Length: 335
Length: 44
Image (cartoon, each protein chain N blue to C red):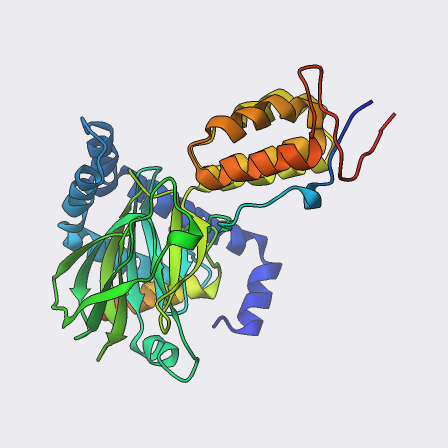
């Protein structure tokens, strides 16, 4: 923790702040030019086929250079000792049991170096009730530099596909439990596989590489006691941003964005398509009618087809080619 | 006259899917950064 007096002095001293920032930027520039970082970009760009396995091979080459990563960590420590306000130029990542630094990030691959603290694991395993088993939807490789004598439980669930339906998500099941060793590598296909940490004797230090190529549309969470499906979240950052932007455009009454909103109905993700359709209908029912009819007829996802059909019946009963005749809902006229 | 529908009256999917929580959105700043580096170096 940074002492209050030291922080107050730093906040009063613009030169000191500029010095701290310059050190962070210099460190970032240095590492962006390191062969460790430039080679991984080059290798990803040169991949003939962007399969998860091929992307993870690139990550494996990166992880093989653990001495270079250790050297980078030592440099970060030295910079931090020299200036307590130095901040490593890597995004920190944190969860209940992990903390780490995001060393590399692009749309296909993220690589982090992390620690699972034995004290945090013990706290999570305490009297906090049931936990969840998360199927990330993404293929992830872990390489344990220090395994902490940890015992992992491995889980499988019905594969998460583009036509995932919560009502048919079933239950997950434990497929095995074993202790892992220092240096061990584990690849988890998050579309149907997961693991939980049962116990660890000491901190676990690991590389984690996430290959988003071929990812499932969503991550699924199962209850650790009932093993039943309990929730889902998107694996696609861009889709979530589009959803939020379309909602915002509707609230801002930006009718000039209607062509873009209609275009975005082509999302590959069923939940995004329906989110956008609801926003479109709320913005301009007439503009949404034809896309809604198409959705009801041939959307690949059964729930989207059913919801579209139900919406047609609820709001457009008797609608003909001349236009919609909504029969229910909050009709408004902005004229 | 523009026709609009109250969005709360439009059916929702039975499969509810939450927003994506990206690695960057999960980031935390400040002294924890140094704590992470220290934790990694100690473990190394």
